[in-house]
Length: 354
Image 1 (cartoon, rainbow, N blue to C red):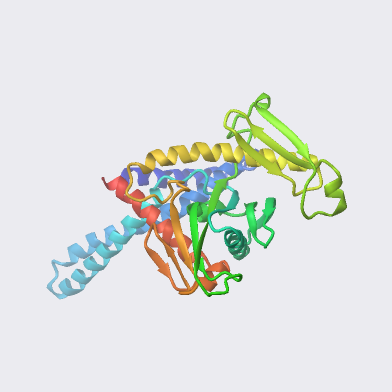
Image 2: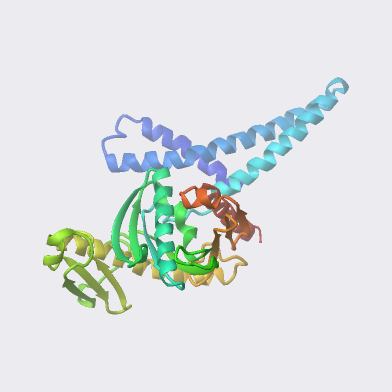
């Protein structure tokens, strides 16, 4: 590891020289790549320099041990430096872990009502609000792509696009089955009902670079949109349904009045779903060798329970229970998403140590 860190430290010096050169900004694409690489390496090399300093402190304190008057002080210095080195070593290992190439991508968030009928649809609406509030806290943009509203409120199915800084990295562990336990508004006996929704978090694909879609393998249908939108949206064939024949994936989009915009949006969702299917296949193979399914993309797994009578949320993958359900449903997800990310990171470190 140290040899690699030395190489990265030398590379940072090289980048400093390249960026200071008078011709650096002549090629802006190259300049942006260099500045991006510099921004990524800077924090890592800074931690490495702290590690080297701690190592030097140990060497200096070891020499001081020869002086009887400085022995106690030197021993304290050595212990302190060793503690620092242990923590810095762990920090460096984390920083050197392979990065998920999708972490910086925007996402398509898909929520589907499952078992539980009307209550499940209402819960789907609650989940959408929870993620929307979390997006607001992170200053992300949320754009409605497709919705199938329930007659009693909520959604049978809803898809939104979430755009912003590192969206996928923070929400990628939300895919799976979400179970709710509460007394429905229509329940006269006060009995607790259990219902469920499935959530899919899909990194937005670049349909040109990421997925090769053959136009001859698509069936595109247009139809009149239903639901809200005024007279215009219901009088024209603005809604678009695209079927990808090889996989059977069907995408519908009717949120915009423009058929052209709906088609473009539907193609984005289609490319994302195809990429997502490929990603889940890869992750499921990797998960077969892991004890935990965090990051496996397995949506058949029940990952979380929201118990309203007890005011608690339990994530079953990491055995985390938080008694602040009202705050969580209002988008306070940071403690949860950070815990999931930390557990995933710990898994990766354990695999490297094997």
